[in-house]
Image 1 (cartoon, chains in turn purple, yellow):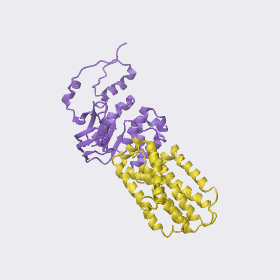
Image 2 (cartoon, rainbow over the protein chains, first blue to last red):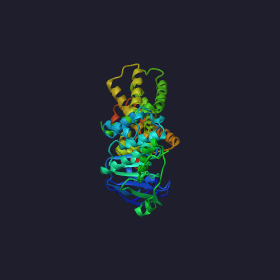
Image 3 (cartoon, rainbow over the protein chains, first blue to last red):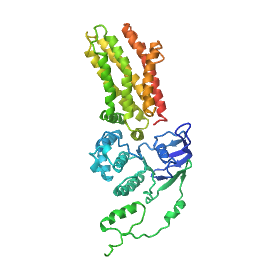
Image 4 (cartoon, rainbow over the protein chains, first blue to last red):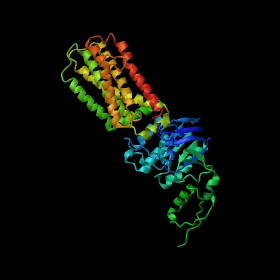
Length: 244
Length: 223
């Protein structure tokens, strides 16, 4: 998939959000889009997903099945979680079995009977992720997917993203919190000054210098914390139980 | 079931479960109460059916707009990611299906309030006029829906002005310049509706077709 000389603005009198941007996405690529607030990350994601038309330039060879999870899931809809996902499965032409699978992986099977407007922000966000994953997308576009998620799902999501990449899918994620940094082969692109720039690993040298951090934690929480730190890209070794 | 129909079903389910479906329905019931306070005298069947179809256009446009606007913008983005441009087809399909209900209610109440018994031709012509009214309502509703006109005030005013322009232009006799709703009534009251129905159908479908083409074109840059 290729984004070629792409320029975009919302209206004729509006300033350009992106100008002459290029990006090549190969099957299996996981790309993290970074950049300050308001520079056009969400706009780029919408262009990649095909929700917006480039004013100039092209988006070529977009995979057929696109999964898109918006930054804020639209919870103001008169459905239960299960009914909503059943409708989305029908729209996606996939069996309803996938609802159970993704609900379990995203830790939301207990929410299936709840109405969408009653969900907390994080729970609603999970519904948004589930609908995007239902159809085994060839292109998965996630706008700030880690915002508001609980620790277990925060740890699970990078694994899910890695699996989509491993089966040849393209994943494009905007992320402020760096939850994907531990993912091997992660590409990072920055949106700044209307351009999309690939960040070279050298530019992350500050992050690659390793140090050892000793953490004391209640034994009952050790496994969960280790999981979370691994998800953030840290090497974790559980040394021993501290003698108290 | 195709993806387009599945999405249309989802949207209709959302519309029915929201309070929005009630608003045009209440307007319709008020309109019917006024129209049929007294029974329609024998011999006036075709005229009454044309009046009903002509007056129904804004109610049907309101229904179509309500259906298209019920879905939050981000949910429409999700639908667009799943279906691509077919999302638009599904929206129009759902809107058309939703406005068949008020059109059918209006037609049914009309038939109940007839003093005489109408011929099959008159009944079929009535159904046909209500379908023309539904297509006009679909186009007007789609063109005033949120992706095209984000401001609710502008959208409501445009919908009303759109209908008024149909009335005024067709009252002035400009049958090709608008949906000739006044011509439906005029021809029916003068007993020439049935003989001129093929031409009237072409005139009545021309502007809705242009309107729906414009909607499709505008939606390319207004997701």
